[in-house]
Length: 252
Image (cartoon, rainbow, N blue to C red; front, top):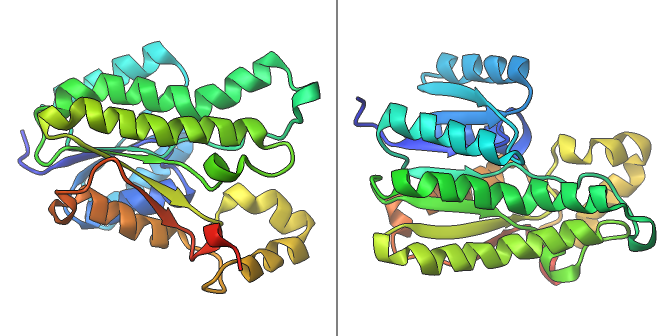
């Protein structure tokens, strides 16, 4: 069994998740990436291995309780421990105003962003207890505070849940030395925004004007903060949410 520390990153076949996985690999972690596109997952592992990173892909849907429990246990048993769990998987899921919102849509968005954090964290805890400086890092959003833009109300609601479950997990797990924090990315230039970028490029470009630092974020901006939170430099930080948005949350 390797003495190297193990990090799991969900939803890591692209965007911020892949940047985080690569950064943690560069930091010396064995990296297990998760996703639902097995072909893309295999390609990403090849990229990581080519960069000298020890990596593996596990394909499963983070909204499916049984699959999460089974796969996290497989990973934990294979490596004997989990040191870092990054709950990166999530998303807008689409837009819907409440009056027209179907119960299926509501449940899907809540499952994608909040159930997934619960399922993965619960399954990982026994293995995190065996970890070195073990930590869980979740992703919330400005929408958790401002309730999101038009049609994104349930996304905001789900991310508010992530903000609170982060603090609740931190309270619950402190006695085991397991730290739990969150990052709240602002507008990061990733495929998450591809639709508006391709259909309304002027709107996409204008978003930088509402950011104090005058630019959109890059996946590496988030990866650097996650790297810090996963390190022993952050050994006395728990129950915190760090805004990674260039001052966007304050408006200008």
